[in-house]
Amino acid sequence: MKKLLSPFSVFFIFSSVLIGISCNQVSNTNDKVSVISTLNPKWAKGFAIQTMSDSTKRIILFNLEKMGDTLSVTEWRPKQVERVACLSTTHIAILQKLDQLDVLKGVGFAELVQNTEAKTKIQAGSIINLTTSHDVDAEVVFSVNPQLFFVYPFGGMNYERYKEKNIPCIPISEYLETHPLGRAEWIKVFGALLNEEKKAEEVFNAIEKEYLTLKELAMTRSEKSPSVFTGFYDSGSWFAPPGNSFAAQFILDAGADYIFSDSISSGNIVIPFETMLDRTFNVDFWGKIVFEEGALTQDKIAEDDERLTQLKSFKDGNIFYCNAAETDYHGDAVMQPEIILKDLILVFHPKLLQDHKPVYFKSIHSHI
Image 1 (cartoon, rainbow, N blue to C red):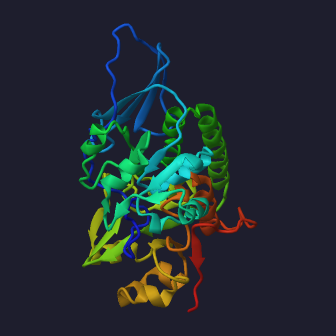
Image 2: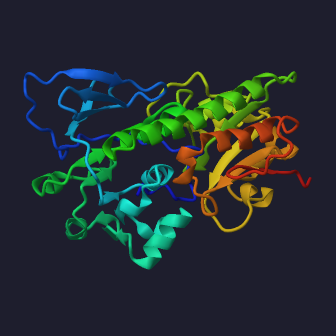
Image 3: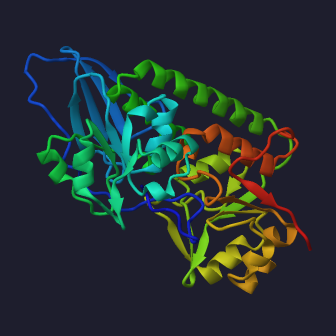
């Protein structure tokens, strides 16, 4: 599971470290086998799926931190899959959307799983914990003997030992996609591997349709786009997602202007705190990700640095936040970009969605 549950979590997290995965099962293909069709995603940039003349699927995964490089290639013959394992909470959300949680037999960092259905299965013992402390326990993985092991390509983990046991490892890097719909579209990779391609297409198309309808709604407003900043303060610097991130795309699609939209980076941008205070002094809205019990208050925010209380967004009470301790922001949210977009439209343009009840992002209203 991605360990993204720190009190200093950024608005949307980006990892800047990507390593090669060597445990995918790549079969020796016959020279006579040809490509019948290729599924190129609409929004995602990290994969392509080819259907071969011998009915196998070729799953090509690209290195999203070094465009043009291939991360892995998996040759896969569709079959009944009864045992899978995964390391990330986002993988759980995708499996659930495909109605495939029953085949999930092992997860990483099970104690941090928030998905309700998966938690019930963990408590019942039908899904076991694959990790001890901060490491994957190889012996536990071997005991599960998954037909597919969904992993993530960062953090220096070596999956070679699983290859030696003929366990196919699939490096899922949806977290590096730059568009919210690109993240959700990774369901098609899972669909191809689990013989649920039609279901994956139907689920994604429904998400895409609602998302784009909401985006169009946000664009119909008559008022000016509010300015927005986000990120977190730590050790004298401000960390924020860049303009080419799915965080920035969410803000744009919700009908607002992200003040760091001109920045390009594969990880968070780092801004000296004094520079950040000057840059954000008159910005309309401030967004945060927190991980703590209870509601976020302005008093809690002021504890970071008293100077933050001088910002326009603080004085106006225009602060919105997601509490990752109370919502499955690092799990279910990957397959619910349309709900996040609703939340943000409600924050920036409340007249457009007055009946919507926030799920992930709430507003702090001024008490000054």
